[in-house]
Image (cartoon, rainbow, N blue to C red; front, side, top):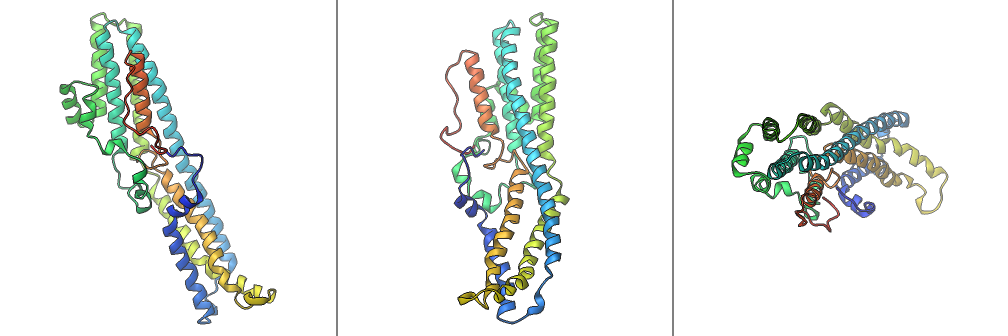
Length: 334
């Protein structure tokens, strides 16, 4: 996630420059036809475009609100995961008499977090990270899940037998949860864990499973495609018609101006229609970049950094002061 104070206007213009080039073309063509070829019948009544612009603003605003809500929910889910992970590690350390078994269960939880973040970083057909204007920022940050194999990372937390069992499972996350539950039952049966503490730990397993399902819901169910399609159609239809509606308005200014611009005011349609259209297309692009908060773009939830931080906290809690570091600490994007 980008954690700078703000995006520079030059960065934003660079990110949206492809739209600017297209909008420039859309703005120039009507003016050339009107001014040089005298095709004055091309004028579109302003009220029609104004009504379309109002409808488009509502649609774009609705989309951006909904996509922002998806990112906000994802943030809340992972905040809960982090808080509950801290509590889980403390309960394993303090509730379970067998220190080695407690450490094994806590480490298996880190494996579950690892598998979950790898799953959330996997690609979906509707995601936008591979679009040209997003790929350009790939050199500024790394996505660990796409550089290191899952099996390699899991070897830090669980045995080779468990790694093979988890990797080969149809649902590795469910397999890890099952291993955790089996371990708790075994401890309960041998008297290492009394009933009250067993139920408390098992309650946390159910909560982790619920949070996993909520994360999967956001990952596997995109912002409805029909709304995304209508939004894109409305925006570009408005951008296409806008310069045609502005021709008559700017041409009428010739009655009031003097000097070099007299008789040529219609050429101002080009910059002003570009500016207005750019606002709409940029809002659409911003909403698009917020749709999928786990895909790994600069504006997503930094789950890789969050997992690294919680692992370091758990290591410190268990007396291992040596921190892990898989992400450049000086990077402004994770």
